[in-house]
Image (cartoon, rainbow, N blue to C red; front, side, top):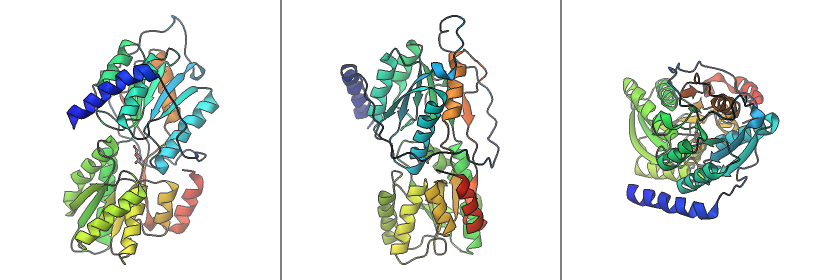
Length: 361
Ligand code: GYE
């Protein structure tokens, strides 16, 4: 696996030199976005020394209008992703930021070649990456550093030395996993089940969101006597997750809960549970992540018991950090965790509908 992937990346980089940059809107029709309610305070992260890019024209003070951002998006795999893309496109339009949007269609090599091209592009002064994978970017990060391009990570962390980027703005996925296990524990306890066998439909392999949610869930499940009895990726999508849950149910009916890494995966599991003649939220408890409008529908129907929020509206913070970085600001921490909370079917349809009205994603 490693050998062929690094080979593929190397090949891609040489191809990229030939092809030189492409962009496509790619994202599904973007919903209008509004700020989510602040529910829980983010963990405090010590501010690490930052590496600022070479000073720009002496004395120039950068503003949002001076930003030309090469934005490398993962693809358009979920409702969360559509809201994240809309946050960047709409905030850029509002603030006068020049946005070069690249949809990698969920292919790592596409992200690496786009990154390479943005490094080569003299008009781009900031590269923003929503990383598909935790590894695979070392070469292009080194290129960006050598070219004094400011790099900001958004949404997902990567396993690279933090000196290779200015800051990371994204969720505490481990904490989300903790909250997911707590919610599952409460649901199973309320359901008065004796056994707590939970199956996991995980995110795309290699994505920090999935890796860390899985880690956080396992860190907290033991205290409640929960066991993860099966795990498989649903690649963040409904149909694939439905097939995964059908296979789990064919293999064993001794399942009391589903830990699904995003709303689409939870919805796929719910469809399979119903087609198996079981009642989601009664026979099997379902916990999802993102808390998109689609997720809320299943909270309101009671088929999903809990939805752990993940904030997609990151563009304003990312652009603000980019301006600070270009102005040589050394006070921005290496990680700026997102503000987010949790929602429960137990809040009741009226309360959830009222909240839903304030949320457009
Ligand atoms: O949970 C999922 C999306 O990185 C937080 O990616 C994001 C995840 C989100 O595809 O819906």
